[in-house]
Image (tube, rainbow, N blue to C red; front, side):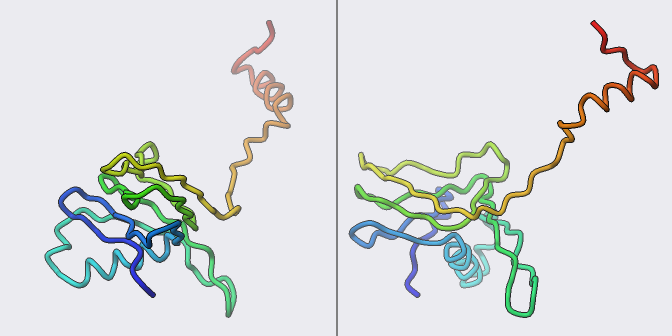
Length: 148
């Protein structure tokens, strides 16, 4: 498999390698390339880590749980220097959560990002349907009276 990115340790950028047209890659691919890049030269262990990952655990004899990648501050992803459409597969979040993962191109280029992500998302059940029961119970305890 050909490399899809390069790593710039001075500016802490993961830079897309242009194929001369529209590009597509997977975060799993980028994460794998980052691990190879770090292991190729032990001095690179001195740079801040670019990723952490969760998932990949076996859920059967033939299947693994999908992976979710977190791009760690201060690393950012920068697209190739050309007008193009960039399709990125896989779940990517940032750590910290409000960190902006994308850096602009150096030149005046337009990049259309298409993100294809998994639909596997867990939500915490807040019990909103039981609000009346919760209010009644709290009032019965004499803790709070919600009456107007």
